[in-house]
Image (cartoon, rainbow, N blue to C red):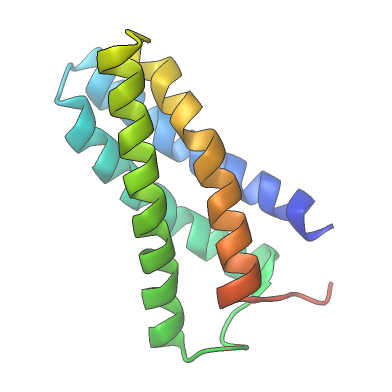
Length: 126
């Protein structure tokens, strides 16, 4: 059940990420790698807030400060994966920026869920 809840939370964060990315990188033609990093950070913040409300028990394993650090550390690894896939898809496979970003978000979703679920948070008892 937890992964279903996280799917909805992750989907909302993904929509934030893709919307910001599409607006700034596709429509306004800003540097897509920089935009991707910025939109990813905003989406990570969105995901964290929604996750502690709906999916995970905040503060159950770590202090709030350590928890936030751990979330952004795990997300930093996800960002590296995201950026590598995005760059490879756009520059080597010649996939459009939007679809490359969408493709990059899929493995990062599973990485974030797994790392958060097993290492950072405990499940909410709802």
